Image (cartoon, rainbow, N blue to C red; front, side):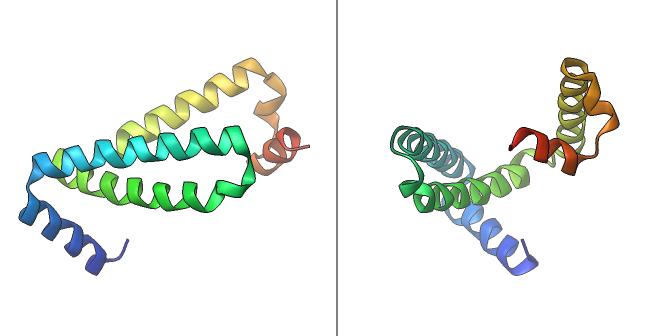
Length: 107
């Protein structure tokens, strides 16, 4: 997000308050869950709805980061843990690039 967009998100927190934005984040996440559930049930016809709800959740996550602090270190730690788990489950992955892994899983 650019600085102008971040300023808009900060303004929303200031105007509506942190508690209201936390509730809004919960609501937007529930709407994404609902869209994903429908997508799984009915297929590709609802991809635009999933993208719309993802956008709402990303916006709310940015506001949550403003309220609760950055999570870069936690995300890095969790991605490393996932990578380790994937390599342990399939030792051949340790020798593959990420592109090769993607191609292997999407055959």
